Length: 134
Image 1 (cartoon, rainbow, N blue to C red):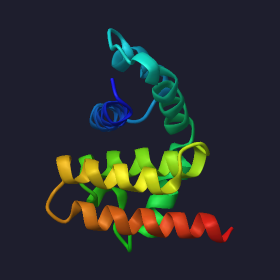
Image 2 (image 1 turned 90 degrees about the vertical axis):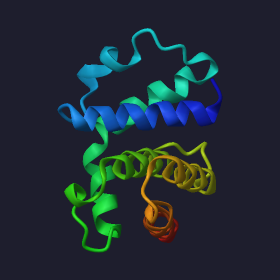
Image 3 (image 1 turned 30 degrees about the vertical axis):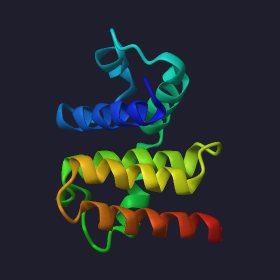
């Protein structure tokens, strides 16, 4: 599994969790059982834990920068991409912000709607600027 595939896997985990009851660390085995993560197991486990434990902070950052769009108005696939990238930007210091943003835009191209890549890029750019201003 490549790093890009690991991100894609984690985006689908966040998406599926949101669809069937919310982001909850107690559901780990439901999503990770029988998955071969290879060298990216640590990344996936860390992102899962952070996303579950920091979901309120992640969602607050998205809400602050989504220009009056509530989370329930954002398509679920786009929300999963945003949550993954915001988690990387805010809590995974070893991942450069530019990599998190670029990978999120690529996921948005693949899974989102026509305008998804541009507004995801805008939201994440705004979050990165806020983070760097602090």
